[in-house]
Image (cartoon, rainbow over all chains, first blue to last red; front, top):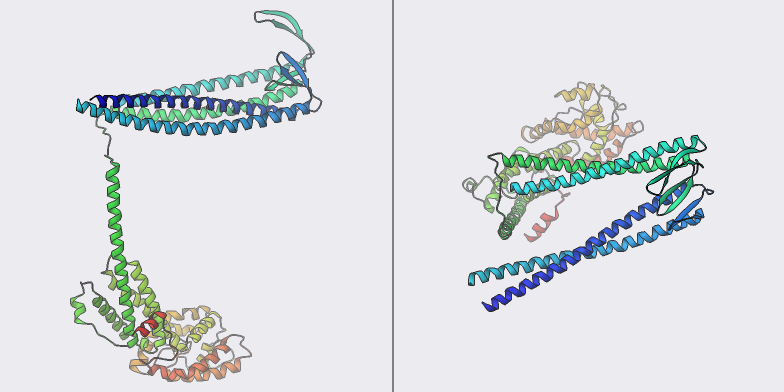
Length: 132
Length: 445
């Protein structure tokens, strides 16, 4: 009985640990997902900006809002800045996407192990029931 | 499915639908905002300055004037501004509005899809609610399924093994059949075959094949004329039989049925060769006659004239028929009076006539019907015609620009064996082509 009981407790602990791990991974996964969405939105925004800047004539004034100040900018400079920003954000997005994939894999593995431990636990419980 | 589960599904679907509605509402708001903006931008440059109430902080307004009515700072995104005129700003607004409309469409489509799904769940709830609707549940045990699959696989393998054995048997039988053909033993129907017809044994098949062969030989006596032809025929028949053997997997009873088919094919094939013999007695002739068949000829009813005819057959025609064209069949009418390029092609249709003529040759005597355009009487007459043939076409050679001349020469060569062939029924002619199959068997024998 005693060893069976201990077994049961051990399994239970295992189950809980695995569950914790899974939860953590899921959190990270969600974070990464939101991150990616944000980056995607930024990229789209910057793309639109670039489009508009291309349409604007050379002589039109371009301003940038830095804090509470509107600062006049050179059009070509502004274009370059925007293009760089787009590149940077795209790179970030790729990185985030790879992280997401890894997290997905981790998640699945954790879920599997969790399921197995659950099975063992149930079996042990049955044994205990039958013994008792 | 439990009604509770269905209910839950329906609830979730409703959530999504509500979410979609919300988004649609938002996009529609954007769209209306942009519309208003567009309007305002158009009216703004009408006046140099506008009297307005300027917002002071978040709670107060002050009367003031709006100047620089054409200078508009547009927020492009990401804290970037650009100074534009009212008209240019209008254009920007239009573009943005297009973007908004796109998104709106997407969300509306999404909503439609989800609504249809919700409709399905509603139907299910109705069905479940109605009495008498039972869900069909089949027990599925993975282990059992796997076992069943394994058993089936084994059975198939066994069957395949049996089939391969049968095929081997068949091949052996066919080989033996051809061996007999080569020996030229005319074995008659064995009584065993009748008794054992239902048994599936090698002997039975042998005998059956022999019997069919005997039948064939009785019908087509020309099959005995030249081993050459027969061997060719056999080869073809061999292939056909083998193929049929390969095709047939299960039933052995149909084999006798297919055999006659094969032999019928053989027969047809043989007949064709017979025709060839009658015409030219050599494959070359057949081929070249085929070639000549293609050519059209200027048909002139007069049979004595040679020059006008461009084909051998016509020449022969002119030679043999002499005064009165002998019309034994409607075809002859064509030959003599109505020249059609199709005539030659239809020669094969004369197969039956030929058969009869062949029979006549062998059984009755010299009164064959010729496939050639001429209506000769006897083989001897044919040969005479043949002999004459080389003479006249040569004369007409300059006028005819066909390969008929070439054919003539071959015919000349073939004249020698011609008279012999009708008599040769069972001997092996020199130009004998033996298949590798038979050759190996012969060696083995």
